[in-house]
Length: 377
Ligand code: PEP
Ligand code: MN
Image 1: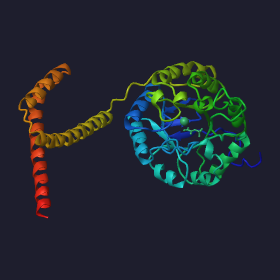
Image 2: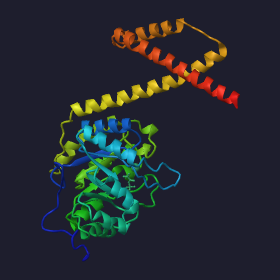
Image 3: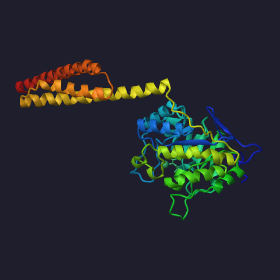
Image 4: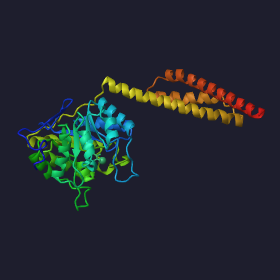
């Protein structure tokens, strides 16, 4: 392999340091998260799981190169913001896949690591672009790529000027149909024998089924992997992509708790102590912001219905003065159940009722004016 001028084995192995996390050192680095970013709450939950498990890096695809053009293609910029925010809240790094120049441009200043997926391993123009950036690149092995082709793909990135490449074995296509792909664990050893680059393993896309992820992850560490990239979803049954291979939060945390012993047996470490939930001031404020947004959205929805009710009342000549009293009574007892001060309800609701009436009046006036205009015509 004479062309592995930069990726070929040197006297020292490379380690890659990203904001305090070292890939290719003694420590096994756990990365996790959903296949695709779906919502802010999904990423918030996923980040909490990864942090609890002792993971360091949050994953989530926002540009999804799907086999079918009709499958979910990713949330793009909106999803990127959810990923970045969730990672920041839990003090994790984040990684996402890029598929072309525009997607690389969009994510480059926001994420810590970029991923080039199996389907793009030999997208040489993309590899050259990844060689121009100053952030680490996780390079997945292609669906049917030999180890030599994979390392030459890494060479493209190195030759273009970026020395920070992490190889990722994610299973290759074989004749065996009982798993999605066949995890080629010998590739970890071979890649490390031929190259100085760190190598991680993604058991999720290799197996395609969650029941095998735990044992394959442990086997990967025993085989010399420097890290693991594992899919986990707050509710795999409802995942928009790769649900069957995604671990539940409990399974992910359980697996992580079992990695330390395996790591130790091969003279590596995995930080065993589970990290506590990170309730920083920033993350608490973000949660409040999210709730405030929901309150405003609910109020807007209420107003819309109130205006419809106004129209309806006009039509039916209904006047139910007891309605406000009934509503207040119901909310008062609900507030008590939720240990919320009933005084708060008593203060807020008259304001909401008043605003509702005003809005109905305004609506009626606008409609009457419209009618006048029509009859004048
Ligand atoms: C992924 O990690 O989301 C992914 C699509 O993986 P791969 O490129 O290995 O199929
Ligand atoms: Mn996936």
